[in-house]
Image 1: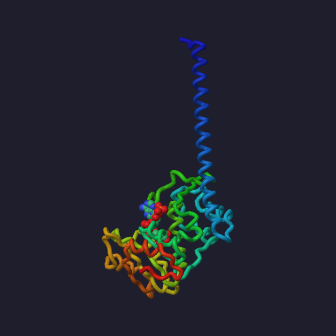
Image 2: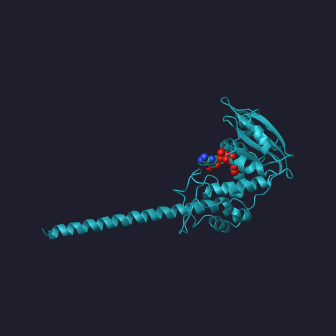
Image 3: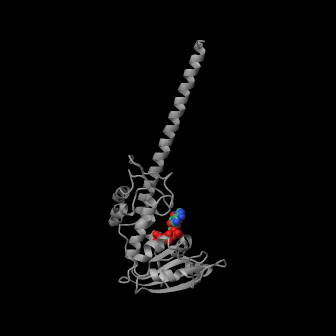
Length: 268
Ligand code: DVN
């Protein structure tokens, strides 16, 4: 039966409304995506400008070349070679701190004085700390959502960056270095961690003379300096680097770390 004119008009109106709604959704998503990309770029540039002597806009371009237009699981560590060449890690002999499964504790401790630095205090470590990013094939955009998780694939943009930066940080290490590890887990030295798999093997005895492990303990601690994984650590360590381990209570660390320490007297 032929549709009445009224019904035809109603169907056309519904089509028009659906098209308008779809267009609105696409536009809103585009605006959100553009804002997220701009926010990420703005965060990168403004954090970078907190460090003197760097061309932050150039650094942004070099950074993007590592992952933009690439599948988010096909960004190898080497993709960041130009970035680390543009902003190399500056050695800070006797002050370089490594860590593993203790990110909050170590940064709470190091941020209060100039006695120690971590990778996250360097230009690139600071600019990208806590951020997530990726690209995709045939796109010139930086995405910050729906990127692969840390363990989702080996060659994801974030994990490859931290492996590259960690390798360079360890390569630059000199003098006596320190590693703050977590006594509340076992093993405290985990061979699959970045510290064990990337950084320890790159501590070079021609530049590094000692490694002090600061094992942070609490009431629930399950590990101490006799933990078997520290035997593995000593085997992994370049010959000639003196090793020692200190068990330090978190409460003492928080107390000692919060006092002014102009001479950087030891807390352990
Ligand atoms: O020495 C430090 C420092 O130099 C750093 O660059 O590498 C060393 C720490 O890496 P790690 O030994 O692998 O220690 P973690 O605590 O296992 O992992 C360090 C960070 O990698 C974590 O803090 C995670 O970053 P995030 O999410 O806190 O910004 C990330 N990470 C490691 N394993 C992860 C993971 N993120 C998600 N899922 C995982 N399984």
